[in-house]
Amino acid sequence: MSSTENLAEAIEAMREKYRVEREKRLRPDGSEQFVEIKGEFSRFGDDPFAQPLQRNSRTTSVEMVVVGGGFGGLLTAARMNAVGIKDICVIEEGADFGGTWYWNRYPGAQCDIESYVYMPLLEELGYVPTEKYAHADELFSHSRAIAEHYNLYKKALLQTRMVDAIWQEETCTWMVLTDQGDEIKARYLVLATGNLTRPKLPGIPGIEQFQGHMFHTSRWDYAYTGSDGRQDLSDLGDKKVAIIGSGATAVQVVPSIAESVAHLYVCQRTPSTIDVRGNGPTDEAWFSTLEKGWQQARIENLTNILNGMPQAEDLVADGWTDLMHKMIDAHRQSKKGVDLGVDPRRVAQYRKMEEIRSRVDSLVDDPETAEALKPYYDMFCKRPCFHDEYLPTFNRDNVTLLDTDGKGVESITETGVVVQGTEYEVDCIIFATGFEVGVSMQRRVGIDLQGVGDLKLSDKWAEGPRTMHGMHVHGFPNAFVLGGVQSTIAFNVPHHLDEQARTLARLLEHAKNHKFSRIEATQEAEQEWVDAIINDGQKVSMPGQDPCTPGYYNNEGQSMKNGRYFRAYRGGPPRYFRKLKEWCDNGDFEGISFS
Ligand code: NDP
Image 1: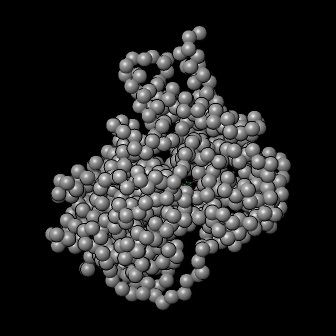
Image 2: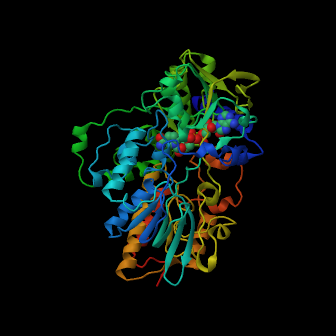
């Protein structure tokens, strides 16, 4: 048999294995398997980093209210500042700016996209990240520095949640109401509420019975584990701990607490792909050579490569870009007529995943544990992970992998977790089980708007979202949405947010220059965009992928109610960003009615 026949057979056999592994994990309850943080579980959402707030309510008026003080809100404020909109009130549930980086302070938390492209506004603030992949405390303090730089603290309403926003036609303003009794009148309203905000718990039978301590990774309980995020977890020294989940969060937590606990059980349903990280301190000499405009160029370079657009140079050159180079090479080979006996993109997928699996063998001593840690699905079916200490952690005597063979933790008792029929007694259970995704905005962030004629956004979107460019909604003038619905899906999320914030700044600058006070997408323009999304929009999948193992990327493997409304603009982020830019460059902001 020729080597190409061998390869084709190996790939076919592997595809069959992927199918079997996927089947094991599909469940009829799909996303409904998770427990919402409310009622008896609401304490899992409490803020462990701040005391409850006592303050007088505020009645005021500003030019813009921004809901969300994470990177989306901060970038909005920065881009508005550049066009003279500085009277901004940020409403934020956390006690400080930072969003993701306010809440996610678990040990080992760090950005998984290179700091030089992930951390916003580095040139504007003249900031040099300390590491190629910065840790959470630095990301949090950078967020605060941005808020300082743009003078956002003075008007910000922290530890505050918007509960309602009502459009007032006579004045062309929004009346924004908060849970602290504030009434803020604003010309513009921007929703920058993020996509991964609301923690969720696994629906494991018996979860409410456990008598030990429990918390979610995005509300890390340092009062229980010991004080400092990066070093001191000394209170765990005599504790047996179970962590449930093995996604991007768990991969960072596990190696960071393993040394500190008496025993750590890692409850795994599906292993992640763990590629090389190669973190290191920033070379300041190199950094000082970067010329003005370097950050945007680097950001675009990464996004282009991750979307299969070959670049003269790979500036970031890390695990993220490696697969894409392999994909691009595979394409080139097929164009040159090299016949591998199977779709070259499949070959690239297969080779990359074999590399990931053989890395497990090279780093994990016990063959059975190593086998359980190998992912059997295509790359990018789940958020790829990069870590150099995670896999070797399973060589420690005080760490046990509890592989559930795709079934999940069977039950939780008063004293521990049950996996494949065996109970493991623990003092503490940590849920690294992720966030609500793909549910309504009302459930995710508890937000609704009342637009023209008292139309509620939740009613308008009852059958699925309807937007123009993912940012404008007919019937909701002067309100703008940042983020993922009907726009695009970028691995480097801040790039996506920044392109939208820049677009909004240009739109509002235009309105200001022409003294327009009302900005609204027309019904026709919205319909056109919705049609384009439905007919031509992209489901999120990578070239060469087979159906993916369940997870939040694919609504737990189930078709989604009105899923066609949730597609992304065809062609990926570069094409979507170009579309926004051309729309601004044309100067008339087609599809918007101004008055
Ligand atoms: P995920 O949703 O990715 O992972 C949840 C984990 O919980 C999965 O391993 C899942 O298994 C597991 N799980 C759920 N239910 C059960 C159960 N009943 N029994 C056992 N295991 C269960 O959440 P994460 O918080 O890890 O990551 C969410 C996202 O946050 C990432 O995709 C990424 O975008 C972002 N993130 C970014 C980081 C960064 O550095 N910038 C760091 C961390 C996260 P299964 O896979 O089988 O569903």
